[in-house]
Structures are given as C-alpha cells and as structure tokens.
Image (cartoon, rainbow, N blue to C red; front, side):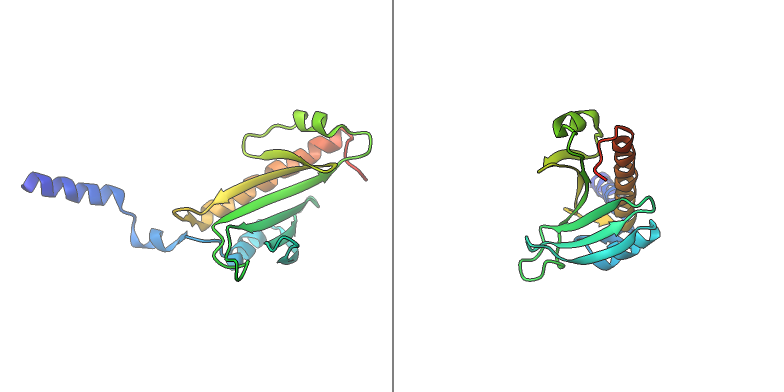
Length: 165
C-alpha cells in the first residue's frame, strides 16, 4: 500500500506545474497582453477594431515596414474581443500584374506558415490554438517567429521582383 502511495505522490510531482506557472497560462487570447507583446517586439499598432466578418483584429507594422494582421479566433459571439480561443496571424503580399500567383507560391515554402492565394494576392498565415492554455512567452515567441518569416518572404518576393509598387 505504501508503494502505491509513493507512486501516486511521484506522479503528482512529475505531472503538476508550480502555482506560478499555472498563473502564467492564458486560456483565451487577451488583447491587452497581445498589445504589450507587440510593443516589446517593436511592432507598431496602426489600427484595431472589428472587421466586416465580425472578427476583432490588430493591424501592426514591423520595423521593416511590413503590415501584419492579428485576428482573434473562436471568440464570443456577443463580443469579438472576448474569449478568443485562438490567434490568427496574417500578412498579405500584393503581387504585380506580371506575376503568376501559383508560381510565386511554389517558390515560397515555410513549414511554420500556411501560404495561400486570396484574389491576386498571396497570403502567409499562422494560427495559434489556445486549447489547454498558452503562456505569454510562448505567444510572444510565436509572433516573433511569424514576423521574422513574413519579413523573409517579403524580401524574397522583392528579390523576385513580383511585388506591386
């Protein structure tokens, strides 16, 4: 019986988190925290609000001038800025008239990003799911990596001379 009690105690020790770690876990997107994290990453908030689809968003500009959009996902129907269970990060690239969108998309490949066509534009996106919770630092790192890759895509498209002016 003591052996079972010892095993149970060890299981609790190895599977539980310290109380402070549990406090740092966000169960839903907090736009105030997202605003802080964006500032720490030197992203300038240029607009925020509710889009035509009813989704709450931030429009941000990176230090390089790239425009990014952050949308809450799976939010409350009553208030699109509350209870969001995900964060969708999107950057759109307007291509010039001579660019073949499919050819350009084939030349851009990042495992961390979804690359897709939207009209004549190419978009790169990344979705973070908050199921089970996410730490502030993890959200910040995900956003940082997204910005770095989106900037790399922008540079790659500029080198290919396929961006609209």
